[in-house]
Amino acid sequence: MTYSQRAKEVFESEIAELTKLSLSISPVFDEVIDLIYNCKGRLVVSGIGKTGIIGRKIASSLASTGTPSYFVNAAEAVHGDLGFISREDIVLLVSNSGETSEILHLIDPLRQLGCTLIAMTGDISSKLAKGCDYVLSTHVDKEACPLGLAPTTSTTAALMMGDAMMVCLMEKRHFKAENFAVYHPGGALGRKLLGRVKNYMSTDIPKVQKDATLRTLVREMSAKHLGMTLVYKDEEPVGIITDGDLRRALEKYDDLHITAENLMTPSFKYIGQDALLSEALAVMDKYNITTLPVENELKRIIGIISIHHIIDFN
Image 1 (cartoon, rainbow, N blue to C red):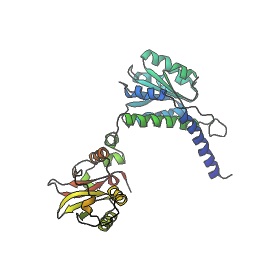
Image 2 (tube, one colour):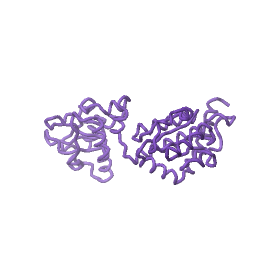
Image 3 (cartoon, helix red, strand yellow):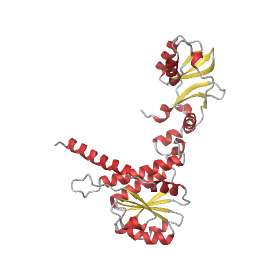
Image 4 (cartoon, helix red, strand yellow):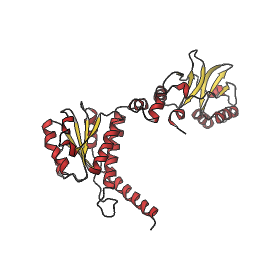
């Protein structure tokens, strides 16, 4: 067997176990999401070793998507770092076995602080599970490691459970790309979302006159690669046609001699040239569109901003 074949077996083994895990997610998960969403403090994630690394990633992902969260190493917590934790915090304790001594030593002190405890463990009958208020099972039947010793599938399971929590909380908070920009000002996408529309828009504006034929429409839209064209009456824009409008027209009309005026949407959304890209993305998200004409201070269209100008980096 080649190494590439063995790698495929590892993938298949982990995927099979994770599929079983996804089918076993219980309504307790819903309760946990509501609990964290309504938390007046922060979500504190704690673990040690390789599950601790996963816990750190979970805390980091949650914090960057709108859920106040941070990681405390379990070994350091019992030597003073419990001072970071307050009564209003919720604590997520991550341990595959549920018997890790450093994790178990945290339960009583956290109870004294009055914190709500969530266990993320592969053994729902473990001491950790029994000592917590809520239990998220990450049980897998076997590791991908041939010895069954090195954390492989179990850490992937914890990672995916954390990702599921993050996604659900993002949706519950209606977390949008413009929020992402605020939390990631140093990242590539964050920096870009804080940029101005005028610096990223296309000035090669797709345009046709309102009496343009279907053939002319298709040529103009294909040439400009923006999935739309503006429709003009002489020098004034009077409508917009998108790829979707064109597809619907081809399904609806037998007469292909229709003109742009028959297909256009007379009213459409604009964005100012000095608006942030995050603002443009918010408008696109609100109206389920992918392009916006850009206006200057004289209310003249000077460009088109597309979602691909914002999201794509190539």
